[in-house]
Each structure stands twice: as structure tokens, then as C-alpha cells.
Length: 326
Image 1 (cartoon, helix red, strand yellow):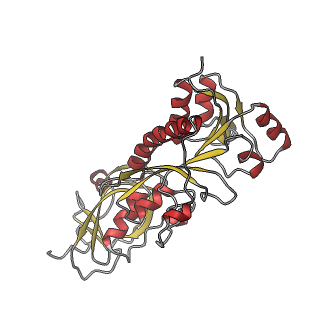
Image 2 (cartoon, rainbow, N blue to C red):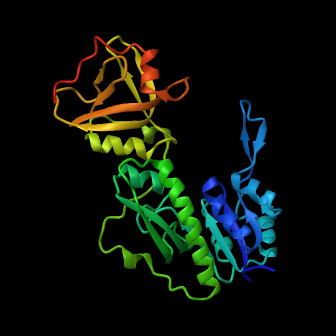
Image 3 (spheres, one colour):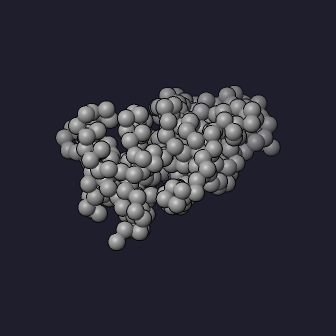
């Protein structure tokens, strides 16, 4: 016997969504079906297809799955309507057309990885860290015409520590999101919610966006304060990864993804982007008011490694400019 009478359709694609689906399915809730992205071509020749993490989990639980190419396709709409959902839940999926989000009698709610109305968009976790925020969280809200603007149901906060990166915050928000999804479903089932317009929460503050991140977005610009660069790198670690091109005093050009650093704020007279290294264990790069000390990185065509391993095989050392005394 189902724990909850509501018939739920779940929509999502990546690992972030799987944990919420798992909690619902294994908690006795009635999952009428799952909607996810079409299988993705993978491999050197794109010759094989890989199912999304959500699809893989759904199949393991014998849940019906739809994978529409287009969300307005009449065949998909007909199949979705046949599931007779009372409620749809969206976690890390695509923007839905009104014909989809307006279908269930209780509507469609989305789990978003920020404290809305801040960080609307595709990459809220990354941008919150890049911008040096001290806290973030998850929000459930009803879908409407404009993306990430619907009435808020619940929000929960977590701190962002100085050593967090996109991966650690992602994982904490994923499990916090599970609890918020369950809380939202139960409140909807019991008709105890009082959704709040996002305009009630802005209080005149500047709204920071969270647009999709591309390769060019990830280029490190060294003519910035140390703190800004440190936050930028950890906000993109480990994926998609902040990157840079640096030229050593030997004339070598290094194409590097940087995953872990330390920040050292202290005065110097070097141009931003200057390499400072002992050639063994220390690899620092100057910013406008200090240095970024590289700890973990990846050179193009090679595996990710510690800076010590990197320096053992790279010509950086005696002729590079040394860091002046603090």
C-alpha cells in the first residue's frame, strides 16, 4: 500500500536528482512515472549511448520512463497525461512548457540549488561560491512562465565555508534537497502550504544571476584580488574546472586546469600572473594583492596531480622570479 495517495511524476537527469527520486520511491510514495533526457552518445566515436543517472535508477526500480526529444511533442504530452499525475516534481531538468507544468491538479514544483530569488539560472552552486557567498541553500517553488520565478514553498540554508568547492556544496545541497522535496510533498498532500511570491523576499537587494557556464567563462584573470581568484577557482572545482595559460621564463606555455589552491594576501611588486616557484614544492602565481599557491592541477593531455608531481616533470625553478619577503 502506498504511503501517500498522490500520484507523482518525477523529472530530472543528473546524480543531483537521483537522491530525491530514491527517497520518494523507496519511501513508499506513488511514482506514476519518470521523465528524463534522451540517452547521450558517448565514447571516442559517439557510437554508444549512455542513460542518465535518473533513468538508470528508475529502471532499477521498474518505474516507467519517458525520454522526449521535444517537450511539446504531442505524443509525449499524450503519454504524460495518461499517467494522471496529481503532482510533478522537477529536479535538475529542462525548462518546461506551460502545457507540461500546468497539467497536474496540484501543479509542478521545482527544487533549485540556491536561496531564491538569488541565483536564478543553470549554475547556482558555482556562482554562489565564485561570488564569495557565505551561505546558500535549496528552494522548492511552483513553476510558472518565467524560469525560476515562481512562488516559493520552502527554503533551507547551509553555510559555505572558506574551503568548500562546487563539489562539496553540491553534495550537501543534494541531501538537503532530498529532505526539502519530501517536506514539500507531504505539505502539499496535507494542504498546509502557503507559497510566497519571490517579490516578497527581494527587499531591494541586487539579484545575482547564475547563467550557464562555458569554457570561456572558466578562464582565470590574474589581474584581480587574490580572494576573488581563490573563490573563482573553488567555485569551478572539480568541474568544469578553472583554467589558465602561463608562460615560464624558459618560454614554455602551460595549459592548466587548477582544482585546489591556497590564498596568500601580501604586498608585492610583480605583474599579475607572474610565476613564482622553487621548482620542487612551491608554485605560486601573483594576483593584484598577493599570491595563489597551486596545490592540485592538471596539464593538458595529462592526469590530475599534486603540484609536487607536476613540478617533478616541468621546467619551472631557478630562473623564475622569486617571491619578495613578506
